[in-house]
Length: 473
Ligand SMILES: *Cc1c(COP(=O)(O)O)cnc(C)c1O
Image (cartoon, rainbow, N blue to C red; front, side, top):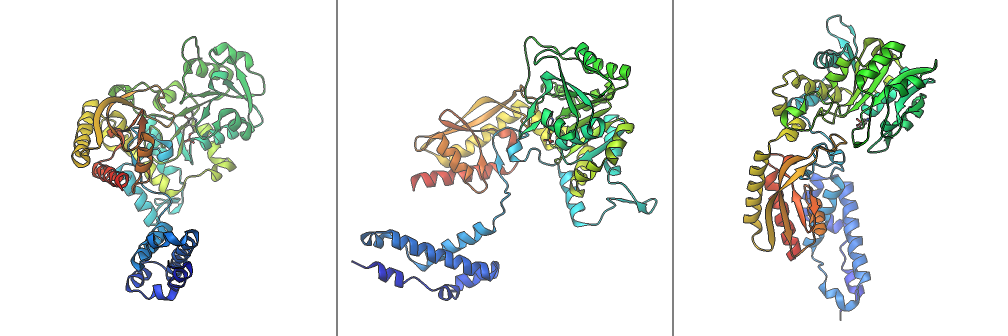
């Protein structure tokens, strides 16, 4: 029997490994100090393996130099890999907050690259040759599209709500219906945001019923704001009543108290035209006469993360001047992406071709079925026996707390195998490069073509082939 000491003695020295031709190549691609760290790491690994085994088991371990170099290369790759990686979204959830919400249109991506790689007139007025405002780039297009008097952009809708409350109601009362004191994913809670802003929350009505008379009865000389919140991610159904936007605007005018609305998703086109559930649009709120309206840039708008504010110039100008505005301002890449995204809304007929979020939400069911059939066929051909691949009717969700009840008809590809549970299959796909994120239903994983991008079909098939090899091995 060979002794452990012999194995330990035969462990290579760092310099010895560093001198190998293959490793010299690696030292050209990675910083030398990192390659040295890597060599120490893999040698240490080997030492621990040798020490942990019984002497009789030592013969079975792989000690070739080739294996060591492969391990080194893997380690270096891992150290250098970005933490933020592309994933394939096969969940069918279009605005998937965990997967980055909206993906940008081609023109928005080009605009980001332009802004990132060049100087720009971000805060420079080219006509006057003097300092300009970063708000100006978005304001004209935002007002043109929504019909509002004024507009501004901040970091996200949470900060838009915070800035609006801080500007309009700090130290004063803001009246909100109990049915609208919601929590939006990731701990955005209306009562908490109000407290932080310094506004004093005056709750009115009950969870299921609030009348306009409840608001009227709650008004005091300290009331600064009426607030309406779109309950985005949940619905109260059955025995319910909400004061309408018109009633609230009328009350606001009668009493001379401004009204704000947190619209959440803030859709700019009427999705019911495409057979998708109705969601109140920004235009309707503007038209109704709401003073300050806030909504997200990366939910149903399909743009970058941002908080958009539109409404009356009187109030928006106050918000722009508030000290918090600087703390929540957007960077130039966001502005560039947002301007390009909004520009596409100038042609409402073409938006659903150009904006990926709108396109995915409005993809017709027959088109999805064709894509599902095609992907299923590719999988059947390459996986052969051992895997059961079928297609079946299902529903996709919009996600991002938008249109929670909307069920978008789709066809999914269902894959199951006797060799692994659905959970194990899901995990293996998630560990692929690129990771493929799927849904689980009973003993199968489901892939929804709605959110699978063109060109990703082949990568999905390759991911399954790899999983199949791993299950065999
Ligand atoms: C999503 C949402 C928010 C938070 O918006 P972010 O852009 O994620 O900051 C606030 N209010 C409502 C009603 C929402 O739906």
